[in-house]
Image 1 (cartoon, rainbow, N blue to C red):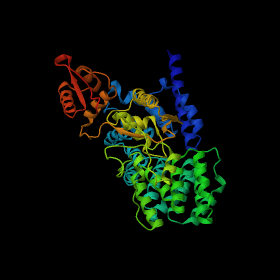
Image 2 (image 1 turned 60 degrees about the horizontal axis):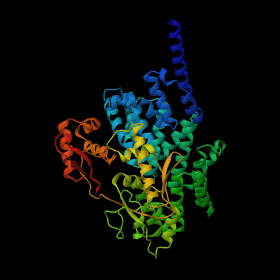
Image 3 (image 1 turned 180 degrees about the horizontal axis):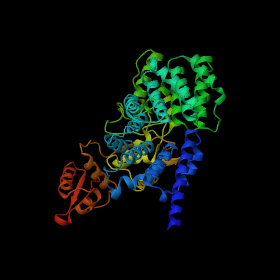
Length: 526
């Protein structure tokens, strides 16, 4: 027995030492080594505390789905959220969800953690808003984090780097922003935090560019030329981006932005391509490309700044033309005149899109067919951002926003939906296809096509009512008894009856039979 105890003790001590090494590798920017070590960890012999720490390291290594998989059973034992579990567990699980792309559920989990005096939840809540380009909300949570959380120097610099990223977007001309940039550069360099230093360097250059201080931006780049990243490193693209931007603004090199676009396409980095195309559109006064970038970016803050830049360059206020009747309906963008407001249209081909815009005198006719609500919503999600494809967790989170994310079942639900849509395209002899590229999903087609949703009425439903509707919608050909729905939704009989009655009245569900043989199914016309 002593011998077995010694083995367990040694394994535990070995795991702790491995976690320390992984943490050290992450701080020095050696993410590949850290990921390899994480995958070799003996998870079954780790305590819950060690597993939480390992999940945190996986999240910092850009492997949040691994973290969610490790912690799900502890947060949702038996399929129900355990609100009494530890604050540190809730914090890490919520942070991992947000990092993976499940923003709504991640925020719900973190709000519970914050009520348990877990101030670090503010940092990850800020991350969730940064992902949506809502920098004003993110700034509020980051200031709370830096004020209230008890953190070490490294975590403090992480918070300040993200605060700087928000201030660069919201108030670049304020002196506080410039002072914060200088402070982060100095501290991260002194402590040899290479990753944070490179982040701070990029933000400092970006700040000077936004302030139109191009010489100062060039000075920052020249001062640290000795640490220029290698072409294989993730920082190389950002380094080259700002170098080429400065070449364009300072030395009027016309080919600099073309080279930046080529580089962004080579690295498949959508955000850099978005920025490069916007700069090119403004510099060449290319209104077609400007509209493409504007409509293909579903973020209000980006559009507001783009409108300001447009007015400064063109001399008049920007307004969308009716050319975009075949585009995806992005948030905040209403299709114009050419199509009925209840319909949505999809542009799935970047190349054909530009050709169609250039030839705007001719009317473009595209095939049309109807699909049901969930497949339609998936197509909307795939097309709302022209530059950034979504991973499987993001798609699941937005398709089933009123349910919790399950590492296995939720993903399978999206896979089945994609399979059905691809079969639908094939049946209608369309060349459209949903494909996975580097873990992210995109809709590919060489032609335009028009998709109309069969349901146009917006329902005013509670969260649990949406959950019930989603459960039935996932199996449109299935007939459900009350008992089956009680088990699936975990609702009391009276509550479930009230929800079902409301959905039947709204026309979302239909009823078959009476008494114990009553069955509910999705209305095929909806």
